[in-house]
Length: 298
Image 1: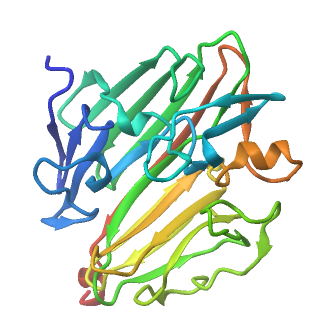
Image 2: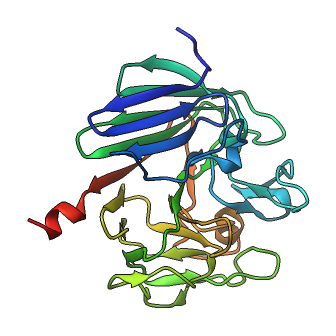
């Protein structure tokens, strides 16, 4: 079996293009001929993909300095010209296909520790298509002799189509400074403007929201996508530039942006985790599709 070339999974009306060598990413997710996620162009880099895993942390580590267990570690600033480290190492590495069927795959990434992340760990991602749609799982195991800070997430990009309506709920937002890091040590109370379905057009956001319910609904008019995530994904990063790029990213994650530094300063509810040697962290995300046009005419 070829362990790194792109391949396509299929189940019923659903197709998923998997690119192990490009950050273990999905290049496309199609259902009944529709692009459920933003489809990547040919020869795309990972940031143009439909969805990629965030491991062993989400979003930014401020100024590429990791603070954990009263220790500091200098990381590589992996997203120039920004001075920060972002999204871990998984999105910038080639993954290995450990197992594969016609509608599922298991991807593996063994990390020995380097300038991007000083801890040894093993990362596993599964991609599964079923009658409802897509299910992704992601886990990281601490293979190091030291306690390892850890966080996980998924970075799916949804098409920003005319008339798209979003429904989801959270109870706080981490304010953002000019340096693109959380400006405060605690969430600012803010009820979700999408507690009932609302148009996404015109909404601009690049924030991490806390107290997320783990559910979101995207209504495209003739079809809808239900996003759900495991209970430990209590934060949602929303990147909605509302520009010519034509996407909205809704990222289920386990922790706030720059969570390790926030926790070191005494902030609460950051979602930051420390894994003992041999301990693992797991998350899951599901995208379930339904044809609302059929329901409307039933």
